[in-house]
Amino acid sequence: MEHYTAHPVPAATLKELRATDDAGRAPEPLTDTEGGAPLRCCLRRSVPGERIALVSYAPLRRWAARTGADPGAYDEQGPVFVHAEECAGPDGDGLAFTNAHRTVRRYSAEGHILGGRLVGGADEFAPALQEAFDDPAVALVHVRAVEYGCFLYEVRRGWPRPPGC
Image 1: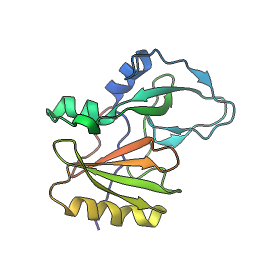
Image 2: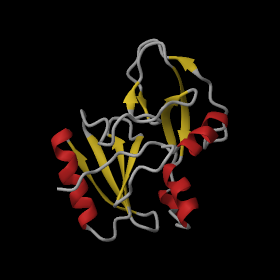
Image 3: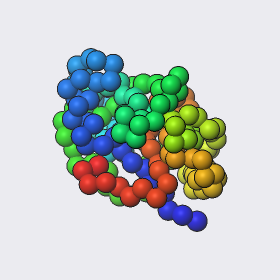
């Protein structure tokens, strides 16, 4: 079975989001007193005392701008937690946040949803991704939280982690 890697929000995008998010708002950093927020910059949960920000992010819109796709009505933005300042990024190259129910949502090269699958835990991720990428029409996959629908990370066919990510 193929190895899959979770890709965080790219470093250049994080820099932009920390200034103005995809809803046009300036983030309001805060000190996380409880910990546990799923950070999309380094793909781990926050710990108490870290400075984080909740920003609006439109992952499909940004991907479409780079590729020339037109997702139309499938374009959406939502809240994501990130470190308030630059961080080192992920420590490792596997999947993240696999300890809960997630949705594996498939997208075409045009940015249209091709379907999805509910994943119940860590042992179900690789088969769900294999199933998604067995379809040649699938260009990328978003892993999302079931309880809120929030974007967690992206997985692409044969896409190694780019530098600065």
